[in-house]
Image (cartoon, rainbow, N blue to C red; front, side):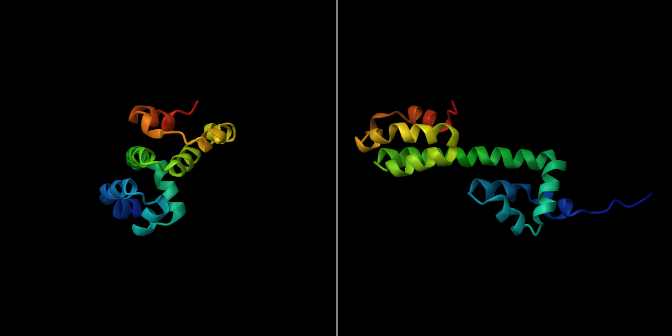
Length: 130
């Protein structure tokens, strides 16, 4: 019987899926993660296609990271950091907020009071892609 060849996935990624998840939640990029694990860019992309468990870890951890960022943005918006909120909305949903920014830039100059918006309303602004 032929011996199965050990891949870098089996030795460098699979045993460290918890590390991959925690690094992604902490804001590390995929490049940071695969470099930390000693895996090249092309191999990383190949392993993502071949191993659904890696895809799942990256998807779930990205959702958690976005949720954490939304909470931070909400708190900053309540403290009057409109620039932070505008930048984040444009980054997270460029299709929606590029046009909105052009149309509503006058509202920003009118000192919109984000403290009157509920956490739910601000999260909806961050997550809606309509």
